Length: 90
Image 1 (cartoon, rainbow, N blue to C red):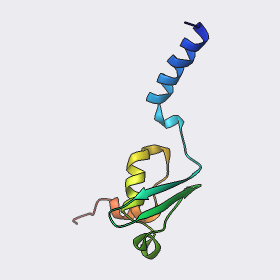
Image 2 (cartoon, helix red, strand yellow):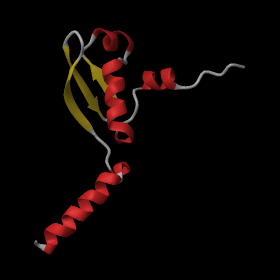
Image 3 (cartoon, helix red, strand yellow):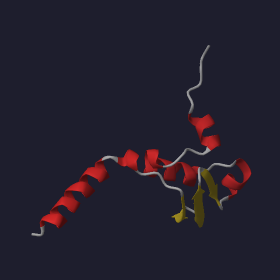
Image 4 (cartoon, helix red, strand yellow):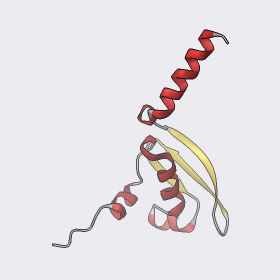
């Protein structure tokens, strides 16, 4: 096997394990929800979805699912951060 190819494969495996190297800038995805297919977009930290909940509140289950799938490669939706922060019982 070509040694150059082998070294590229090894580096690709390393990169795949070091997910913090990757940050998405923008993308568009089709999300097949239970009732309809929605368009979820991400652009420089701003999330949008065409579902009614996202239009009304700025966050929805489709955006939250994408955030979980992509992990640290994207910024969380601002309203999702508020929802996910632990509530103090003081």
